[in-house]
Image 1 (cartoon, rainbow over the protein chains, first blue to last red):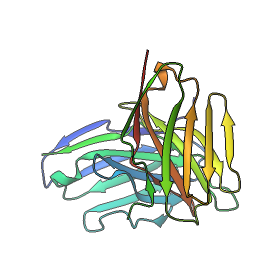
Image 2 (cartoon, one colour; image 1 turned 45 degrees about the horizontal axis):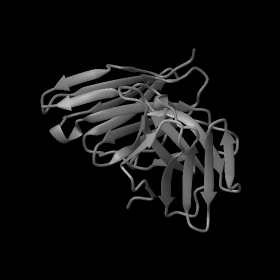
Image 3 (cartoon, each protein chain N blue to C red; image 1 turned 90 degrees about the vertical axis):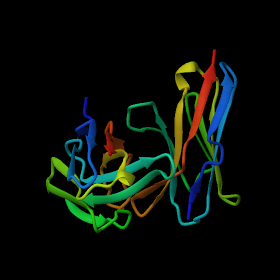
Image 4 (cartoon, rainbow over the protein chains, first blue to last red; image 1 turned 180 degrees about the vertical axis):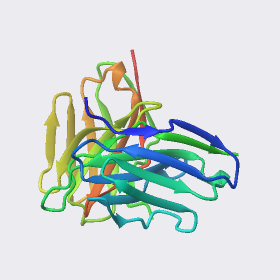
Length: 117
Length: 110
């Protein structure tokens, strides 16, 4: 039963601390997405990677957020320093990019619920 | 600039009746559309999609309709079941990226 996994599931931290969220995409998927869900904005795309290369991170606050894929089985999203307004659920999703450039169905992980006090 | 909008934050339907969830979009360059379903404490799961060259796609109790001239799509669930109670997101694809609506919380009452 292939699925996207995310750790940690919950994180409570204090303002100013560094937060790292991890995602393991489905084996064989070559596209990874990071989303943030808030009450105000709904589901918003922060960044995405294809074949481990960042394709678009225009949705991400550059001064404090960074996203990487150290290898094909791990994607990370880091916030440094964290702020209370970063409190949200962060989802990772993976998919398979087709030769047309179109990405097949995205499969979401269970999310990391972040609370910054 | 909200390119994909779900104007109804919630919908309540009686079991056995039809549920109709609506979604509007502004960008005519979107090439396909999807519906995702989300239960509490879980990630969204894919439900059904439709290419922009079609106007209808059906999968069991779920049918998605696309009206390109109105830039509107809808998801019909018939008959609705209590297990369908969840938040439904519509999404539009552009260049491999999905842009999501705000979601509509569907409650199906027995």
